[in-house]
Amino acid sequence: MTPGMRHPLIALALLLLTACAEKTHPPQVYKYTFFSMGTQIDLSLFDVDPARSEQIATAIERDFTALNTAWNPWGNGDLGQLNTALKKNQPATVNQALQELIENARILARDSDGLFNPGVGGLVTLWGFNEAATQMPSGPPPTQAALDVWLKRHDSLANLKIQNLTLSGHKPGLILDFGGYAKGYAVDKAIQHLTDLGVKNAIVNAGGDLRAIGSKGGRPWMIGIRDPRGPGMLAALPVRDGEAVFTSGDYERFYEYQGHRYHHIFDPRTGYPTQETASVTVVYNAGAKADASATALMVAGPQHWQSTAKRLGVRQIMLVATDGTVYITSALQTRIQFEKSPAKLIVGDVDAH
Ligand code: ADP
Ligand code: MG
Image (cartoon, rainbow, N blue to C red; front, top):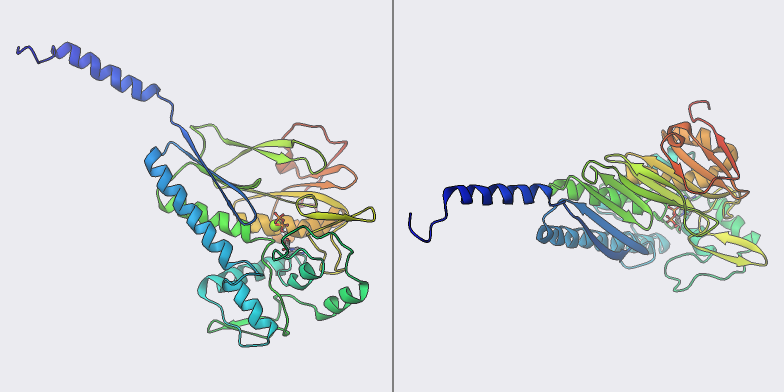
């Protein structure tokens, strides 16, 4: 044996040690944060090579940046330009991506009996919550006369037709606003992109609204659901492969005027922000539908959430009423872990309605 050559047994021992070290070295969660769609986006990838993780994360950030521009109702992107054309009563055209966004929204609007209504752009503007406003509005609320003008328009996607990428059938001045589900749609696109890139375990969290794939080394991703009326979390939930968890609430964007809270989710039947619901969480295997459903169920409220959920086809729901009562379906109750016990808990199933 030459002096430079290791003894075969030592070499074997070294090899085993290395194999052992590789096995016991725990795979890492790679985290990446950026801002888009008015919120912080946290991307977590499990067991992906760090250099590759970086590339993947920047690709996902680019996707969000592009969609954020394209779908801003008030900017110069695709939707902003469409709204400008609608306002000026000029021929309104869309591209494939916008057509897809509109057609998917149309189904959700129909299935929610118009409680989810992306034709609310005019209302959002009347109440001052359009994103062009640099600050949170401070009131006063719009006059009833102004709201009546909007209500009489019956703005919705119902009569809108798209043929050869051209819109028709709508009233001039319709303002489209997909804020009630664009985040969910974008999160779905991100999950699809991650899957296409071969990522099997990840979570895309857009300010508490999220979708996960796979797990964290065999253990489910754990997430928190915010308490709408206090600091910290109301509950924790282990998320299953492919599931999305979306929450709508009256605490995200609101102002108080003469002792009343006015927030950014509107009942299209009254023109007013919804009154009786503080938050709704929907768990479903797609972000877009979970997001739109959470918005629709905010409008449906404690009296009607079950029948609306049934029509939408969502079954894992928690609704926190403004009086503190928590309504939950048994499908969600069996897996949620409350961190604060609700003042009153009512378990009610969607299929009963
Ligand atoms: P968040 O964006 O805070 O997560 P939502 O998903 O409920 O909450 O979206 C709220 C946004 O949806 C509003 O800012 C507005 O742009 C739009 N919106 C408000 N009311 C409705 C409604 N009834 N149907 C569809 N979109 C709505
Ligand atoms: Mg929503």
